[in-house]
Length: 136
Image 1 (cartoon, rainbow, N blue to C red):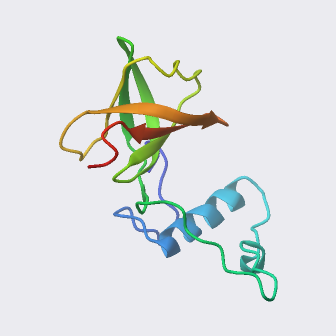
Image 2: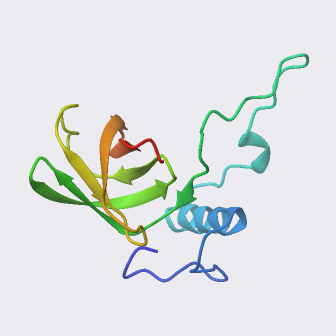
């Protein structure tokens, strides 16, 4: 939850499930004066005779909204968490990502220790991080 804002009415401030995420999205869209996306538009089913999409992620994602500390080449940066998994994390940060060989360590609240990571993609203010140990 973003500090300084009340949760949407009826929302759970604990671990988020799909229903909670949907209600938070609806509340955000309403606050911003935007129309919600009808559920029928959220996924396009495969064409007849086509295989269903395959989930390519190795590990399930868990949404987080905490501050995440990044130590990038000796500089401490504070990012906002988006999600975390055994293999990596996604954070929001309005900064250019480091070069591939720049040491990067990520510290996520609730995780036992800081972990070495690398940026595998960065766009739209989001950095997609992969742990260098591969989530082992």
